[in-house]
Length: 87
Image (cartoon, rainbow, N blue to C red; front, side, top):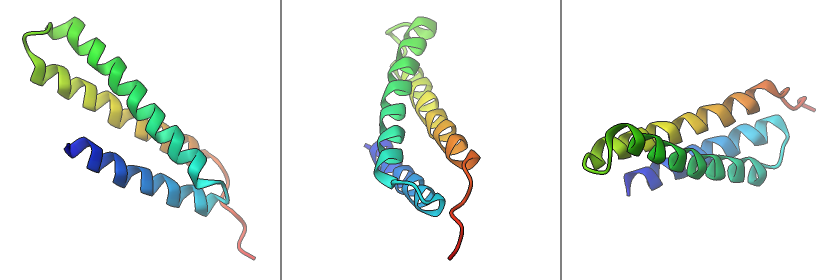
């Protein structure tokens, strides 16, 4: 449940950054959510390979760590783009 709340706040931040860059915020919000879900799934699989199915807390923590890293990847890509010129 807490990760959904975190995802909402991080997605809002990505939308604000996209607006500052003069880009469509919805596109970047979708990138953020899809990246989050994809990386969380990959992290869960990775955690299962490392810890096995008997240690679900560690598996979930690895999944969340991967998911948060996807936010930083999307943010880094967005930061590479130039800011919108102020008129």
